[in-house]
Image (cartoon, rainbow, N blue to C red; front, side, top):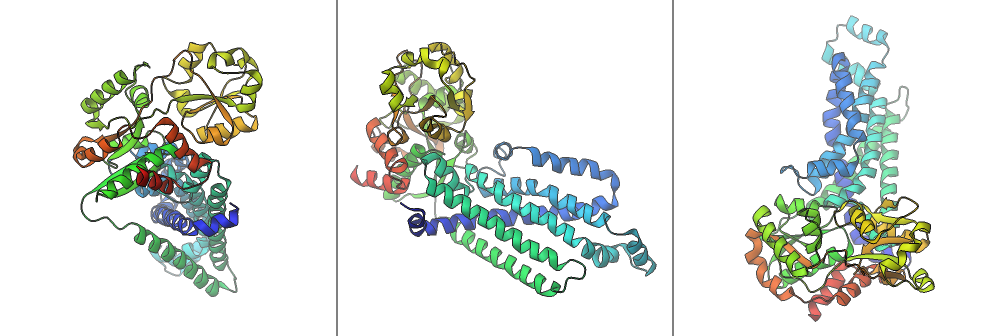
Length: 506
């Protein structure tokens, strides 16, 4: 599919994501202005506050966005979704607003203030009639910078379920789909340029001696109002609360998790249950959201729950892993596990297909002697987990000459295919394995624990979910799951379409 055909087929979703993105930027920047402008004015009057306040704003700029989202999510008031993203984006936008307000007001000639005082103006009159009008070009420059920063950082908000154009960017990386990447990136860049141009015109209209000041101001405010109406209308239309009780289904931020979540959601809807979707949540956010009551159920893997959440050392007995995980989840978290879905998504140690054929590689042990000449690359999850790189390298005796590159999992597939990497750790059911002609080496020493696919749900929702769980038990084979993933990653179909087809046929 060409990019033009992609836009023709997907413009409604792209428009919705653009509206979500604009809403995040509009509200967060408005919040930053509401806090930063009065604070900046205060700092021009109270010199002793400048260092701590500007220092705090500087610190907020240096905190990585995902880390800030992660710090806010466990707080019950925030959770996943737009609220967390708006607060984080507002904190990022504070610095340019505060700093430019201080710079603009303090940069006014002292003689002008003296003249205002001599005319009998009060402090409030000086601020309203002299200082703010003269400082406005500098203040608007700060707001301009804040808006552009917010447009860029808001793409990361998709990782916490806040929507926006980052949804397409993350999805494109995961599915190796350039159309998704281009659509998200171009729309985000255009939005930043439009906002920058509009605020720039408004900024020039406040310059001393500007001939088009009134026209520029009116045009700027009209344009800003039009953007606000566009964003708010989409937000209101897309956030109608469902009537009655509902099940909130979440997913992690990779293809298989979204497909499984969509299968569960559509199965529930066929039973007349109202469903809300909170998909594509990064890292451990689904688990944290489940504990916080932000979602009710999401797909997980027993080996991941056993090692990454419960912090146990890996074992290889599937039933023992399932039983102990189910027991401890109930006791520690008041969560319940569904019966296994019928397949396991194990860690897959992957090499290029042509390399495997040329060197006759079958097992992971076959690759050990070649590791000295290879560049390995692994996702952050694999590098940090107790069942990940450290134990894996020790169990097989790997001795890579170069330090393995730690990077986003979806990018490791592309780097392996292009020859930048020689060995990676993927997922055994990924559709990209077939799509990119990769080869999975056999875990001949049986290092990795079993990763049976299950759903994890809050215990107070298990009654509404039980019948659907029973129907889905052992209903998906490993080969079926790989085909479903390939339909999304290889044939570029949507998870909703693929899930709907599976639900109808099963």
